[in-house]
Image 1: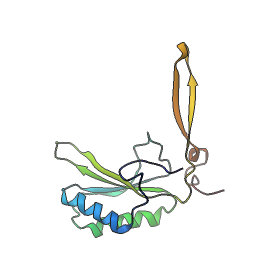
Image 2: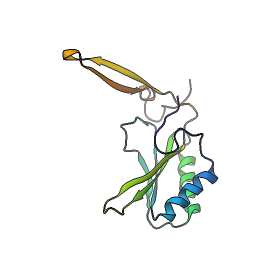
Image 3: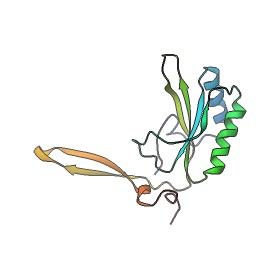
Length: 141
C-alpha cells in the first residue's frame, strides 16, 4: 500500500531533478525549507523528526538537495519529506510538503470499526508498521 500524504503523493516518486525544480519554486517564492523523517507516517502523526534546522538562509536548491540526500543516506528505511513554509500572513504555515523517500516495503493501514451507544459507528486507522518496534518497522519479512 502506498502512503498518500502531501503534495504529489498520488504521482510516481519524484526524481532528483523534479525535487530540485520544486525546491527552486519554493525558494523563488521566499519559502524556507526543512527536511523531516519518520517510521510512523500515520495520517495524524504530523510531528515527524526534524533533520537539522529549517533552512531559512539557504537560497540555492543544491544546498537543500544536499540536506535531503544526507537525510536519505542516514535513514534509508524511513519516510523523508520536504516542507516549505510561508510566513506572509504573520505566522509560519506549510505552503508545500511532499515525500521524497519511502521505504522499500510499505505495510499499509487497516480500518477499524467500533460500534458505540445509540448505533453510532466510529472508525480509526491502524498502521501495520506500528506492530513492530521503532527502527524495525519497515524491514521486510
